[in-house]
Amino acid sequence: MRPPAAGNRPVTGAFAFHLHLTAWLAVAAVGLIYLAAARRVAHPDRPGTAPTRRQWWYLAAGLLSLAVALTWPLADLASHWSLTALLVQRLILILAAAPLLLSAVPSALLAAMTKPAPLDRTLEVITRPVVAVALFTAVAVGTLFPPVVAAQASSGVVRGVVDAGVLFGGLVLWGPVLRHIPGASRPSPLGLAVYLFVQSIVPGFPSVIYVFARHPFYPAFAHVHAAIGLSPVADQQLAGVVAKVATLPVLWSVAWLALARAARDDAQGADSAVLTWAEVERQLERAERRQSHPATRRHRRRLPLPPRADLPPMSGPGTASEPPGSELPGSTPGS
Image (cartoon, rainbow, N blue to C red; front, side, top):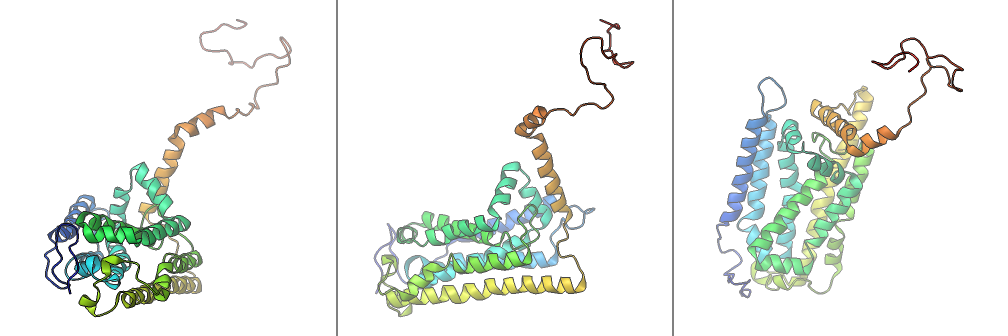
């Protein structure tokens, strides 16, 4: 059985090969932009400005994750056939591609990318744990609304926008977790564990609905039996289970590692909150912007000046003489 035409383009089969040239070009563009930016920021006399060998491996794994999620066969299954495939695609973007690509970027390059004041302010806000939870929940839940899923099934442009939004949501999720981002929020190990626990529960509540639902929510996946041999309801329930099984172990493992590292540092007397030079520079830039802000300057001018201790109080004309040398330049005494 074949599904009806999606938009103006008929869908021929669940595993019919499609090149996904746009997706491949997008993956290549990410790699080329990284290479150009890393070469521009790298300085031979400043250690830490060039990507390390580990970061090159992070980049390769992140690009591979993007290619798996956005090309044949997973992209075809996710767009027209199976809700389970759609959830797997998004889990790869959120739990693999986003943290790998973010980890691949050196601190110096991140500092250069987010140096403009509007971008720095945005980074400061969206990496606050409460804001990150709210924003990621909005992205994760909003992109699973039936009208959005139907639109991405019928339009390649909408599908690309949704995939980019999901990847952005993954970057927001991992922003407070990764410690090499200059200017990002840095919760304590306990706060980080609580943050990851909340992120594993709140945005994933649709998966609970999928598991216990008795009717399908997505007409776009009505022909899932032709692809993977499941009914739409069974595919929907499987999608809920996959989302929970994949999300909880990953986020909870990262939380446990953060707590274990903090406990080890405490036992060894080491300081796990050492700031990098990029972070120090970012904080100095923020302080300079606050000092030069017009509202700050106006407030500073309105502050009353403290009385000078070297001048006697003035109680009336002739009651106190001015100290020597207090005349204004160019004036004569008594004028």
